[in-house]
Image 1 (cartoon, rainbow, N blue to C red):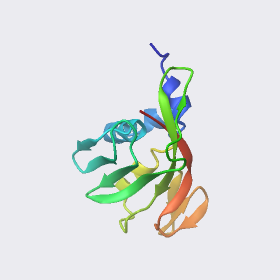
Image 2 (cartoon, rainbow, N blue to C red):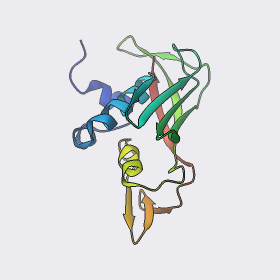
Image 3 (cartoon, rainbow, N blue to C red):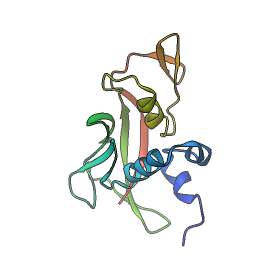
Image 4 (cartoon, one colour):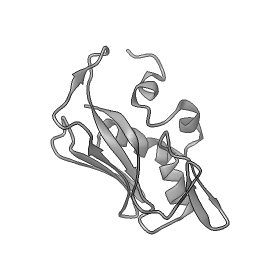
Length: 144
């Protein structure tokens, strides 16, 4: 059995302090996104496309609008980890999908490397003004 918190360090999609401050639905959605599992609860959904053992694309939706998605960074590249799991690298992209709401901001802030805040009606991602259009955040590990 893995010690508590190991998955957080390995995925680098969110930190333990971020996780503890998220709404429960965001925690569940981010966990499903990280694991490449389909999820649907209330207004939030995670869709996985491609084979279940190695998804090609993962989307996080809010009210049916894609607000975050993964694209494979290294297709067909898998590496066995020291924990016996298999994983591959994906690129994380975010967007407001034209809906700059507090809920959109809260869901997206669930990802590590994403810090969205608003000042004078302008959204900022990691300190840079953002118009809500798709923005590349970085690469991360997805387990299968």
